[in-house]
Image (cartoon, rainbow, N blue to C red):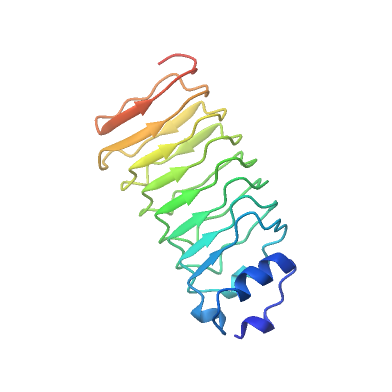
Length: 184
């Protein structure tokens, strides 16, 4: 599909995609559009080969990534997202969703996930039991009461400040930054 034929609702997103310099949606592997005041992400479903999506510091309240099965890295920090579905994005290894309004985050289908940055949301629980490749976790400034880590994984580092967590133990934990939690 030609880029000019894609029905984008948001002109700033259209401009960012056209700036990639390619002609068809199938050729687009990366979209980088930080601080572009993007409010609507419709049209992204037309990019099946997209590997990297960076829409950090925009005004998104929702996003549908089901048409992007090849995504490996997603940067959606500093938006207004209330929910996000990663179930179709099984190749994701890097997820940044910090400073949003997420109260839930289902990462169970992301077996390749290595890095998660989800600080400053409204998360109360996070289950990473299906993410054995996890290496970096930052989940500070959430309402976390429950954090389930994988039973078997690589050594990893975690930053959990300003949460309600009162227990976390794992043999593979290399670095733990923890402050202002209930008790540790």
